[in-house]
Image 1 (spheres, protein in one colour):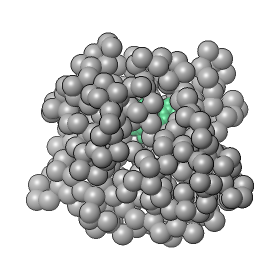
Image 2 (cartoon, protein in one colour):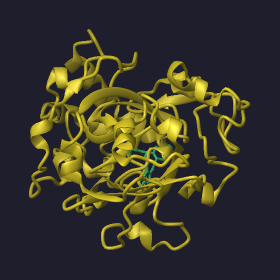
Image 3 (cartoon, helix red, strand yellow):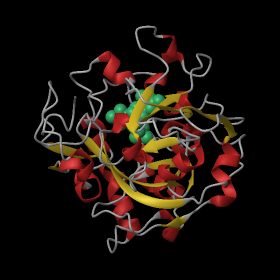
Length: 342
Ligand SMILES: Nc1nc2c(c(=O)[nH]1)N[C@H]1C(S)=C(S)[C@@H](COP(=O)(O)O)O[C@H]1N2
Ligand SMILES: [Mo]
């Protein structure tokens, strides 16, 4: 079933067949507090036990298969699990890694969800991150040096894809504000443009020339320094599996998921608003702001509700994905539609 190719929108079948896994997870969590992070639970390594009970996966161990970590030892392993920051918890159950690790958007590897196997081709070491543009001094930083210069913590965030599904994930990482501090932007800089790797040996999707590779995203500096903007190095209490966007991806929980760019190689500080990958393809559908807003439908579907991955539950969508308290002030001069587009 996992191997079967599905249209990117055909998530229903998956959601139904995964119910068993979800229930197991709930039982594992004891139904008491669903808000506990993987640091507290020591979740890393517990998934095998769940897997054997799950059924429907023909006895494989899909997590180790899809993460393909056997011959690669992550040099930052000793930093996990990081301390849970309990200022960032949510009322929803954490979506199981068994689900989120196999249902991904990563167009570099195809326009369907089952890219986890193919994504193992990313070579996450050596890896450098370039900080350039309107900064005091350009820097090319080794990823391990960067990670070790930051204080990692775990945060549980909701994630809302523009396709109307949602998940709840325990990310590990550091505040994007700390990267901005490290970059020392010049006073004229207003935006940060971010880029994913470009490597057709790894990512066959990047041979598709009708897409404007590399994947690009952008935020204002105010957004980047908002407390919620989080640079992710790990998920589920361990270094991020490649399909999640290792070794460094963004999490902007109040915006539609496509803003949360994966496998970042460059941060460019600029006074020009960046044009994102999706904005280049369809600006009327995927605007710069892309803040979650139940009142403004996508041109082709409603955004009023969202389906929780791994369950049959559909819940109302919340403005700014429920993070208005932290971010609404950034957009006070924008109208309902502008909150999304413009
Ligand atoms: N480089 C890159 N980053 C990306 C994407 C992508 O296709 N390429 N997809 C985005 C979308 S649409 C979503 S919903 C999230 C999905 O993250 P996940 O696979 O970890 O759930 O990644 C975002 N970041
Ligand atoms: Mo998405």
